Image 1 (cartoon, rainbow, N blue to C red):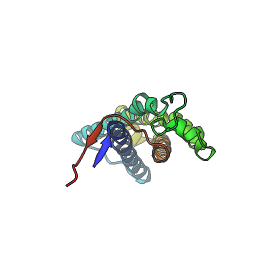
Image 2: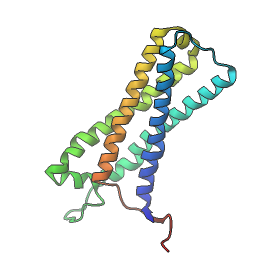
Image 3: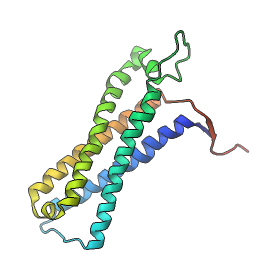
Image 4: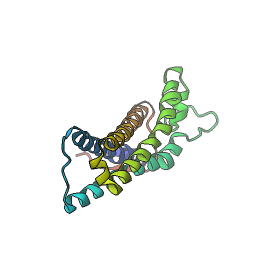
Length: 188
């Protein structure tokens, strides 16, 4: 079983950073929705508040790791310029997508949306994490503030889902390839 270096980094970007970020966002949403539905707000102990803070920080770090690795590592590989007269565009994903009217929309809509909406998710979740960490008592006390934080968390979750979905489909249509060959398991 072999994979190229770029394929491995793309998988880490999408499945590890992006996938875990999406799951963490869903966890925050679940907690916020549950607290919105509760008639009374439970007071968390000091240990629980520390774990919540760690959870929120890890979630934000995962979100920023996904966006920054996508923007500054994967995206330059995606946009690599093909040499004049190149017949095989497999190593030039953007050019490969734009070479056919059937796949051009994946770049024109999919990548353009992914580029921009992907940044919204960690920005919004950073705000949510900050408010939940700094003003936890106010969020627990004021139902409207909780609803607002929940709305921002939901927007972040949806933005991450759209970016991740487009990323998965784009990688299916025109995968980022190249780099050193890595053997994960040798054949018998």
